[in-house]
Image (cartoon, rainbow, N blue to C red; front, side, top):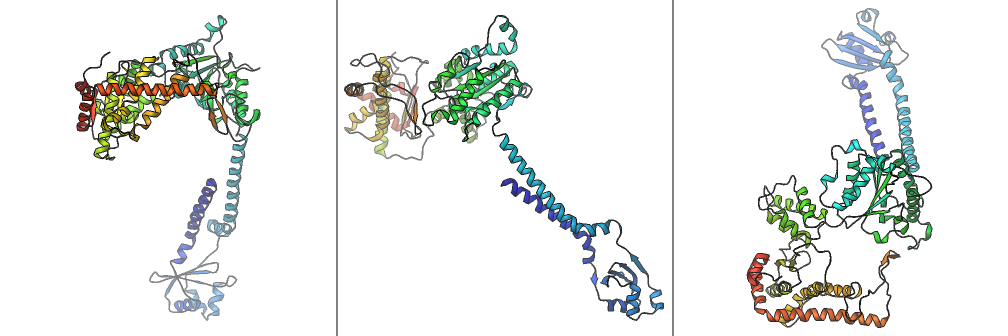
Length: 609
């Protein structure tokens, strides 16, 4: 429809141009005054005319004073016959300067043929353009099953080449992928030893950890063509189109071997088969079957290495993960403190920073951040500095951006009443004090009663080092910290508010995990409860099935209640014993609204380790 409207617009403009061109031939006539034959004869008798020009049935006259007139005669009648019929003598006509012109040459042919040729030309052109558009539709229909994979050639990547040197962290992942690069560069030394490079390499890790960037780096290091396509691009409403596009993709790859094919978000087409209600013939399963055949079927794909990325390896079909297909799995974890600092160095290039910006401190304040999160953090800091008309980014901009990314933007327009502000201050002070006095809890970095996101206030506690395992004692202290605000409200006001809703939900969920997943229940023993399988039914994911009796379910509920109740009692004991410190923290919060770690420790002292 858009192309058809464009065609009509083109023809409308063409008609205007042609009309303007034809008007040039009539423009001269419109500038001359038209008179009758009798008046022309009177002018001849009074000797006012200097020249007379006859062209067909048109008579042009020029008077002695330079004026121009026109008139018309019959086509078959000559000028001399006309003048005689009006009573002019031969002597009067002999003195006239009469010029006879015939319509010959360019003007004659233009005036004769244009009225017929222009409509024919316009109709023919219109039909031609319509046929071209129909052919384009047919061509697109015929190419519906072709792969739309984008191809980055080595010569195209010279300007913006990505290699392992431009990727911070992920050392183990880069070492694993270096073998792929070596094989693509020097395949002979592998072949001589009878070694076969893995056909498929699956990059597994949380979102934003650089899986796609690592795949581009492999292609950049090896200097080979790089085909990349998303898994969702294979799935269409027509059955068979996805499989056809997979065949087309691998045909292109074979022609450009050695090369790399990168399938992003593999779980879009690689989910376990047989879990849907569409049977074995739905579009996604056919596409998956074709991928399996192309990777390791009857035909050999020598020199074609398939890289793929997913953050949900648990839902992938087992046939994808067997040897000969994605038989090498590379973990891309969240960066640790040193890696975060290195990533920050890369993302601060080109950004003017003040001397007080400490990347090590920023890395320590951002545990659990991925590379994408860190890039977004520095971008938010740059936006904030520009908004405040600064020429450089300072540490305050970065710290503010950390809070914004983690919790949400500050809602300074949300004005709390004095009563609500007082409750919020005691609530956050309770969290902070319990965390500070619990041996296994992480240190407090910031306490605030300024609303951010959906939170009325917040308390940030961060570990001093990256942790990969958590102990039973740490979980118990974390539960007590979660209920610290709830206990503070109960202790000070004797009643509760809805401000602890989120804390209670998280405490209940953590207690459930301790019992059902981590085997930390003393009564139920070292086992897990709930069979976790990914199933999809009517668009909903059922991620857990009960593998225990109703009697056991009651025991699980009792254990969850015990964990929550004991955590509440622990928090209440700490606050009752240190009520004076609770009051000091609250008063300082009401005065300043925000307490950083140094200010907080001036009130309660250094945390015991």
